[in-house]
Length: 559
Image (cartoon, rainbow, N blue to C red; front, side, top):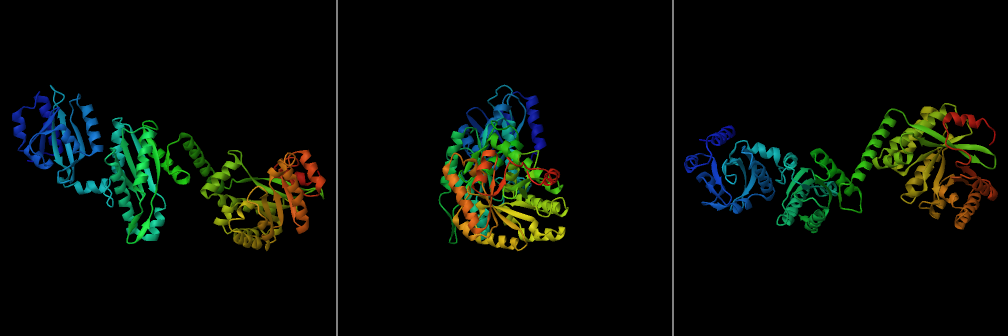
């Protein structure tokens, strides 16, 4: 006779309804069934013959011995469940891992109920999950084939259990730094070996100290749950042990690599009492650890979460601007003090919803910058082709280093000039001087190709970045724009004054125009005109204007 689950529950309900105690004759009767039966009091357990065979035990054993054979994580789940069901007198069901004498681990399903008269006594029906013909499907659904660890399905199931019974826990989310490079360089067999050894090392280091369960969620992403740990002081110690376990390199077939994970940590219920939020918070914390080279692990931080949420919103916003052709520009005039005329305009991205600096920060982080600047380049060339701006006025466009890396700037601009029938002399490209030290040869090649189209090149933000004489003597540029922070300190820092005078003289010697950015006061303007003619850009003369207001301004012959 083999009792199905429903039949077992019916038997327990029958015993509950008709008997106040589980008397010996009922226990004797049930020993003949194929399921194992246990009668448990507050000190010992009495097993049926089938239960003895299943658990590889003799006669009565102590309750402590029985519990010690159960996996630590599952034991906590069982004891917590029993503490709740002890006074409810309703059937319970649980699956736990049980250690046999031969060190083999089996999964036991236990169905039980407590006695009416003595809540320290209970009847339990146990069976080996492996005896169920559905066990293979269960393992496929809940265990990782490579590492034999619990998978994401089991992970979510265990977390849901802990939350449902309000058991506090620490949740670790980890992935292996540079694992893709290891896979590509040494092959998938080596990668599989690393994944298996990674979890084995961590388990070996922690198993005698902590109660935990480790999961492989996907690829090189793992998680560990530590029930009843809820302080950073405790988890700091865990993290140190994890890193200690990974100090030695991983070696196979002569290949040797060092592995270090990025770890994100969150706590239930301190950070959240919802499964979805905990997973998101752990993932965000891991992302922070992975992208901040000064740390290896990170706790969930609500301020960082808010900043990241805002960044994601801005990222979506940028994509909408690009896709819906909603990018808007303003134009700040550059003024020639010698001719008293506006000679060019700098195209500046304009936005009323978010700070422009914030939008560009997010665009740079997400590689959206080259799509945004591509759109700006086309908008400027389109404005020039419309005839709104006189032929003798050039419009300059800022191009960041990231854009020159992600986009063939020469090919893109050349195609747009042809598309809109615009002469390259009508535009200028401003490239930040900070980029020059990275790859000056490649940059100079790009500059020369752009100049072949008639485009003028502006050495932007000079003097406050990684300025070098090498850049001034090697690169093929047409104009130098002095960083606005230089003029802002000219009256308080004599070195800045000497620097400006030196650059003025240098520009005359090489026949290159100097543009001073950030001129905001009459005193600054008067000082610059007193030491020589130059080009000026700043709020003292003009703020960035819409294209309509630029047209009105340009109708004036002088300011």
